[in-house]
Structure formats: C-alpha cells, structure tokens
Length: 142
Image 1 (cartoon, rainbow, N blue to C red):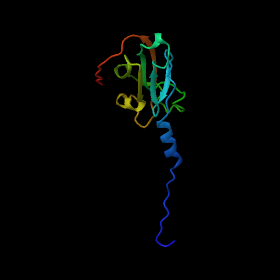
Image 2: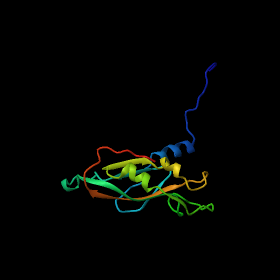
Image 3: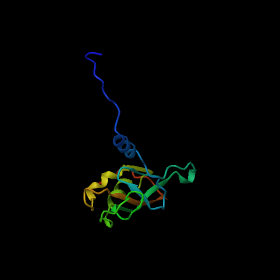
Image 4: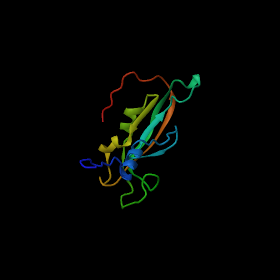
C-alpha cells in the first residue's frame, strides 16, 4: 500500500537470550555451595517451610566469592583467567544475613570485579538457615 511502512517487532535471538538469562535464578539450598552466573539472581530463602518450628529461620551467609574460580556451569572456556577471585562475603552478608529471604542480581557485585572486564565472572556462595529473630533495621555499606 502506498504510504504504509512495514515495521518489525521481532527481537533477535541474542536479545531474547539476554532477557531470559536476566530472569534466571539458580536454585539456592542451605549448606550447599552453588554457582550463580553473572546474569542470574542469587535467591536464598529460609521462609519456604510451613512448619511452626521453622518460622524463625534466618539466612546466615557462610561464603561468597566472585570471579572465575573454575570451569563449570558459568565458565565454559578458560581464556587464561581461571583463578581470579574476590571475597564478597562482607557484601553478601550485609545484603542477606539476618533475613528470611534475600534476592539480588549477581551483576550488583561488579565493583569487586577481580578479573579482566571483558570476561564473565560468577558468584559462588553458600548460606545456612538458623533459628533467630529477624533484623528490623539494617544498613548495608559496601
């Protein structure tokens, strides 16, 4: 038709892959060291149980390292930079410990980037659920 323009609303497969990856969350289980890729969410939940005795279970961050520690789920090729890492336990502890649930995008840890910026890093973290009282006020400084 004269004067009509055909517009494309389709997204490229890389746009779709990026959007889907940004919504991904690795399954976090207490007491298990888990890899969380850079485009995923860390999601720790100690409130998932319905047992009355578990209502006051709170997160305690046990370990958190950001970098390229080894080949695995998040790092498929070495590129000569396996082993670069930063301890991010203080940051994860400030965001999560003392809460029933904690969720954050792994990319928020970029300020600790110990590896070359063109390489993807990931979070390797471990937490436990312990009985206690929830924090009412918390100030995270990092």
